[in-house]
Image (cartoon, rainbow, N blue to C red; front, side, top):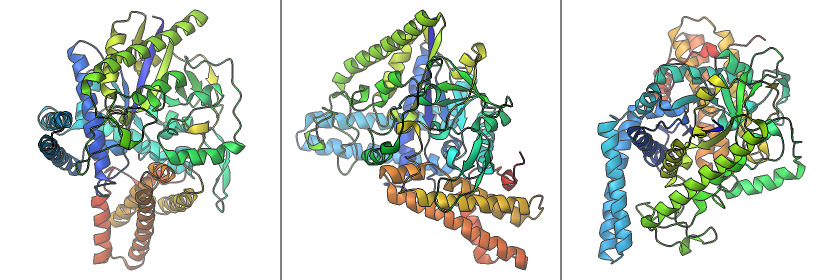
Length: 570
């Protein structure tokens, strides 16, 4: 064996259940399920039926697993698929009536696409996508990893207690849904922070104290490995994964890069190896795998990577009022008015060419590494799952073709990260710098002039939660426990990194700002209810209704315990 390829897919949608439908809210979850998660299940099962193990590592965030398991999603998704079938039928009638034959055929394609998904969701997967993925893992075909509970941006959270709660609940939720301990974790935004004396980067909120390295929390909860960007392991510049997709990030990057210095490259480290990370000097740590940037960008980049090929389906141009897509990329330089009609027959050759090219460059890099070192290296390719199917409609089929081609190779094969780690223990202990997989390898996407106010709200809420957890530790009062547990849920939802990302990219800025305000206000109101209850011994009818409403609408993580936020002693 001369080398391995690890596809690592990160599946995540922020908590949107009971928080809007269209254009922002549940539709995000429905789109991801119909365009990415269901097609991936279909592709995995197709491979398995042909005797091929996908050997893909796939992350399902705790908050996504909670949403996909909810009856609200299951019922809503069925209605969504039925609605999509109906609007595709109307498009077909319109295009047939107006003599647009190709578009009518494409509308028929969408009718078939959503009809098949409805049949599979209801009768093959019994409305349970989490169980469908779990079954694939139980049978040894894929590996599922966890994440922080609500995808909190861990390096910037203000308290170690918050980091601890995010990871602890992430592990516990994984166990509840998948019936075993997670071996690996996707740190939100691949963002890491070592142990050091930390102070808040937010003006007016300076609290300096010694912080644990994130790997210490992973060690505490039995997590064996995580993934970071290449630059955190090797140094050098990093090409962020989101810059090309969101115009607003180019403005942010222009501001940020003026004071940005490219880290020096460490020539002794290799992106083809794993390393044990420990910044505490205690042996408490975890193994790290680094993103192979050059290989990954073939898939990430819409500018010169595969998704930018003119034959593929254009993501942005949609038919009104159905919202369905009927045009192809055409070229990266063409505006939406110039996009040409989509020809599905052209796509097969594109997929063959691009899957063959990808396999060839994987072989090239692994061979070069083997010839140089005499060791079988690993190429780690982490992607957002939603890139496949949602952003790049044909991406799921491309992934299947790559795995089929690799299955025929004798010296190179796909592997899950746990399987790789079992026989490839790291030989070196290293320390990593702070950073993420954003452009420049740092935090500017999540902390900038547009988002700084959100961090002030988070820090105030964190302080409150830790103080209350310590004050009421050991209480037997069910009402106090219920109020504090709900404050914990609202804090977790407030901490979601999605809000800063959506604000910075301007993709759903108003929605994200309102969600931050909503959860911050919910915490303040719950604190007032707690104070009133403790002084009177009673819950008023209005206070009880408010608490019950929040428990119903934001009732994720049913086993939550507010004492998770009690002060951590070093």
